[in-house]
Length: 384
Image (cartoon, rainbow, N blue to C red; front, side, top):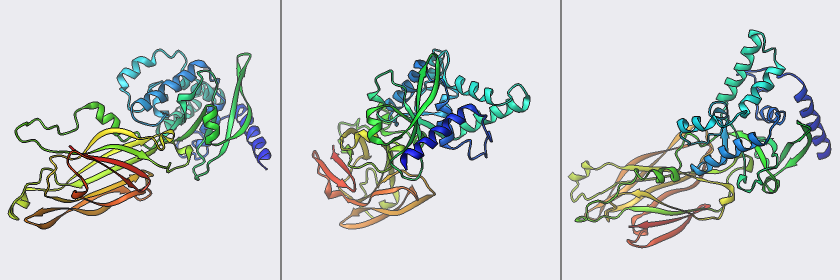
């Protein structure tokens, strides 16, 4: 059965490269599907320059704390730019590409649409606009293993949780490139040979913790030596399993902590001077980082007080959906009495809840690191 399906996919790809683009533009579900975009890329004369373009973009995204990804919106406007890159600097660097992939796409579309007519030119532009707004990207898993020469297989995220799919094999000879085969790929294949996956971007709207840490401007540093205080940190993060199909890429973990910074009330009246604060950040963990401890200093609570009783703590793996809230509370103690502060922490309905609950302040010890397992992640805390 798999041989028949693969042969059908190969025939489909070969025919697609020879026929016109159908139903171009927004609202045309077929032309703007991930399968269609993967098929179009497989028809382009991808060479060493274009391979370098994608590799440099996904490497930049990775260095910026995101997944190994190259968004179509960047591909069409700032060739070679990664997610999180400075677009002004990337725009200058883009001039180094004499024939970026966006040129190949425009040539491909123009050859298959009556571009010399106004209607045809409008169709090409509508397609490019739709591609720009689609949120699609080239995801290159295990790109760090690339040998610098091999042309990747091209596939797409089937979107149904499957762990395998067919991919187009592109080969070049005598200056021409063509789809020469269709094979099934899974994550094991992607580790052995390069694979481009057309999937949906899920993390570009977030600033990963690693990028925030490099800015060196987000944490409340203790500059008063006369009144030393402790901050509560997460020091390490370890993902114990991948949460999504490998086609979807990395796992994006949102961490929220609700508490009260610098709480030193001695009377019930003074409680009115305090309100809860919610710390939140995102940790992007690539698939090959499963089981690998990621090190950082992320402040959860500044000026940690012994009067803090319980902290609200939530870890989710982002999967989108409708925005909702977890209505919870943090508590403090005044003269041995506990008082709660109501907190709303947002998350999405499709998110995987990794861990949700309260952390008792007595769980932490000054000057010591505390490691615990929270669902399928391990966290190391420190009160310093």
